[in-house]
Length: 228
Image (cartoon, rainbow, N blue to C red):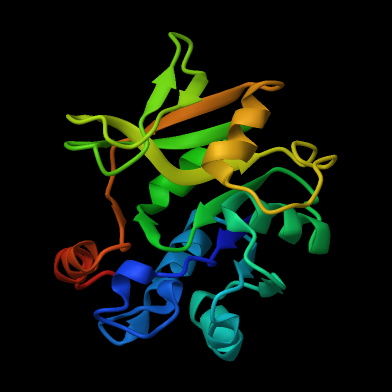
């Protein structure tokens, strides 16, 4: 099974602590992306496509080392201009068409191997939902009684609950006819998909952290010091 890894974030909030491309932020002497790729390999992913634009040359320079470290064949697809999270996937699918059901994930988010394995099971379209104590920083989810996604809600809703963990599974045909254009996964591509197809929500209670702020990066570095 292939994974498309979205590495296009500008990492604006991290520039006070690093000048590295966001996915390549060093954690205990290695790029954060190396840890994500190892998780994918352990889950059983057979190959990964890295989707990049901002500082893509840094990803290209480390591509061979990342592949060797994870034991995972890697392909780099570079956008000529920023295309957003949805556009990055559509662009990559045009360059490297899916041959079967596949995963899509954000390169700046860490989940346990079991989270990826859950998403690799079954069939159809799915979204991984992580349960957190405070969801105001993230987009919340509206889910029906059958566990189907109804809507992605804006950030700002406080309290404990399920959030979008930024890991998706799509069928080979899900976006085969979609026009390649700049767009957001959360604000455009997924709502358009929900209007025509079902998306299952897979609940996940393991570790979840994104490294989008200096504080969350520091938390990851401290909490997961021995992650290998």
